[in-house]
Length: 231
Image (cartoon, rainbow, N blue to C red):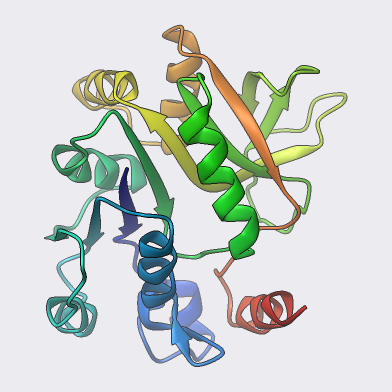
């Protein structure tokens, strides 16, 4: 299965709060966010790994150009208007029937991720979206599900009964790429609106609950993430 990482943001909040290295190279317990993801993907039998960074990330570019992996590795250097367009530029490298996409700042327990990937590999849904009931996000995307964890909708505000938000990890099958192409062609910009288009397009999406997923957006999140991984 192909794996891909969106790492093209500027990490401006981290920089303003005194974190001197670009976000992909911010470290948790001595390991950078990007290196941790690369290792986790390999541990989950990645057939290829692709990463997109922006054109200003010279330090990250040098770091990743020196990476040597036992699987095909693709580095895309391109500034984009948002995560959905970053996904679009990664899509030519997602050649298999199934793939996993994540943002660089997602921190999760590895055993939960392994079970998540296995569930997607053996399941029949068009997409399996990582969700969590741990809500510590400035602008969460709420994921509303039925009793079978089939996703009914994505909303910017909590609805009655909402208990999950998106964790920024997406396992999808190839039909999702056609929806992506159409979204870009129609000048859509936001990843959350792309996810809404998946449902509108008739794709069957299911939610996979993680106990906790932490987004490293602020300097304080690094401490939270390290403590989480140590438990």
